[in-house]
Amino acid sequence: MPHHGAPLLNPFGSPMLSGPDSKEQPPVNFNAKRQSENRPIVAFISGIAEGVSDIWVEKLLKTCGDINSWRRVCSADGNPQGFGFCEFKSPNDAASAIRVLSSTDGRKEGGWSLPSIKPTQQKLMIQVDFSVKELIDECQEMTNPAASAKCATDDELVQSVEGIIRELEAAVIETSQTDETKDEGGAEDDDGADNTNEHAAVNAESGDDDGEKVVSLELEEEWEKERARSKRHKRYILAAEEREQQTIAKQNERGDRIKWNAMRDLDEAEEKQHQRDDMSVMLSKWDDVQQAQMGEHSYYRDRQRWWRHRKAERAREMELDDADRRQQEREACASEKPASGTTERRDLIEALIKEIPSDPKALFEWPVKWEQVNDALIKSKIDPAVRKRLAEYLGGEGDDSSVSELSDYVVTHIREHKPPQELIDELEMVLVEEAPTFVARIWRFVVYESEAHARNVT
Image (tube, rainbow, N blue to C red; front, side, top):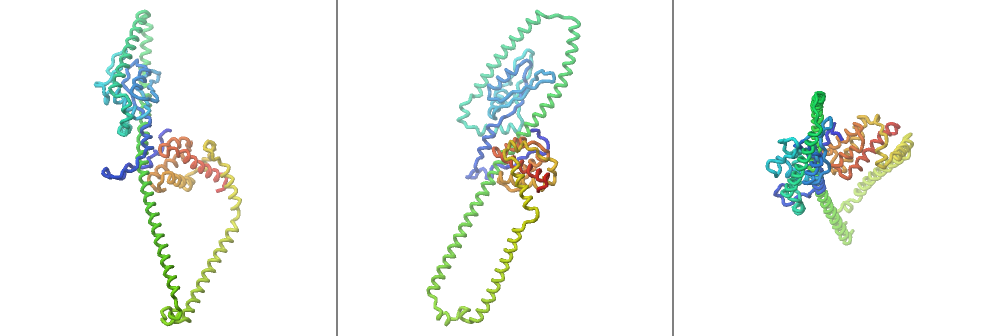
């Protein structure tokens, strides 16, 4: 997916909340670490001598680790250049290739020069973006020593590379001898051929200049995409760890609150039980004659006054009861008499909901009425719905900065009328396996709102 428009910022936050001296370490996000360890790494390979075929380059790269692909850059006229891109299966494979093959960080003193028909001073180089280099270093630190012990050592890999270099050198010598034999047997010089060769050389030189410009643009674009992807992936990992810490803190706080409420309810129940016990004891010992003689209670001191107060309190209680009853009757009458057209509109809405498919494949093929999805609808309906759904999936609040950033990206995607599959591909780094479900829910809401406004059943 092209990275234009609003960038997809990382919505999940930071590493450890406790200091290095804390006894309790936060839970490790194994999903994020596993995703980093298995993430493909794209490296820039340069210093390939002229005449060295892709077969030999792939053989050298595969000696150091597993690769997904090797793509050599060619000029506009199809001539292979001395550089290209290799996608390693994991950061560990890329790190192994850098250590063994690269002239700057490699184990080979002075670097590797690939044999060629034409002598060259080029050294084989393997380069990655700075953020990718940090990711490789992190994965190296997380590598299990027992697992790494099973892999070939760097010295063994260097010996294997030396063997391949010797084979390549022998192949180059054999090729040069064959070319010399052909040149001796079929060489014919004439002025017409010379002029033709000169014109071809000029054209080739001009084509090389144009090709270098095209290659430079392609290289820059590819490199920028990889760097942006690496930075975004790193932010996702850090954000996921911070989100996990926030979720744990909220769960602990909720648990403490539930425990406190339970203790309060238990204390209240015990207090009520004590009051009932005290009342039972008092009533079992109650003596009207004795209480009348003592005159402590207002009933025994002045019964007429007590009765007047009681009748006034009772009248107020009956008035409040009547007011509540009348309010309930008014609400019941209002619910039994719906507004005109409400039932019909409700039926249309229910029919529209049933008409919109629930299957993601059919839903994504539904023609959205984009002319109805204007800024007003996005601001009033779609944006709040996206924020609410993201808060549910990520465990944050609607005004959380990370939720807000990711929500802005989703809304921008919808505003630009881009297909839902591209949104799934981008959100998989954040929501992992829940990305298709989230996008399907949001897309179904967008389809419903566009159809409801088009049919005037909102």
